[in-house]
Image 1: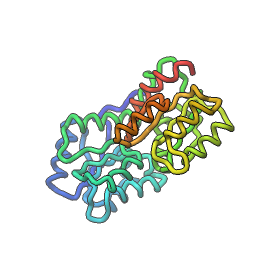
Image 2: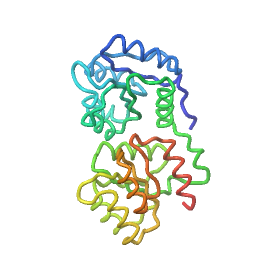
Image 3: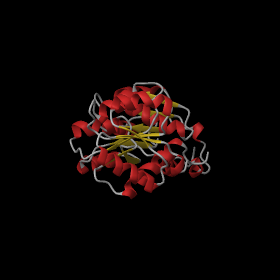
Length: 266
């Protein structure tokens, strides 16, 4: 499938400020987006989405009637809206607000002000998500990759699974913590494990250690997807035997590149 061009992306902006809205629309057009839609409230955006069918929602954090977190959570819990990519543009730095956005599978979180190049990269990530360039996988058959996805956030599991299914991975099992993952690994064979780091019961690092030291699938490729920024913790995870670490947001091209590196024998 040929990747969408930015001129083919239909973007809906949700921004209450007239000044900020004009600036962002101008930046979108500079990046190649044609005629973006602009709403000033979350409710009006949600009401318009089924009819307008946007390819991407770009939202501020603080709206007159809800937060950007409320908006993306409502989208993720509405079947006809749940797969629409979401981008946050905000000066908000409080992780109380930002972490749920990451967990919901945001394409990008951009600060205010942002650089046009950063916006363009995020728009390209959206196009890659919608129409991924699977030619990057070369000789790999993604349909043959049986994958276990582990994350305590249902929205994050669903987003990761959607990225994987978009690139052709069909056999995906989801579980919500490391303990359930261990049960699955004891019962079945997998070609790929994608796991979160911070989880109850058994966290991502403990799961990696189990796989590498105790399971019958000790050589399985493991991708850890996390918003963790503590470098000492990440170093410990790498030392425990993880194959690769991906940031949240979980980008399609990063996944394609990692699969090409990790799955050469599948």
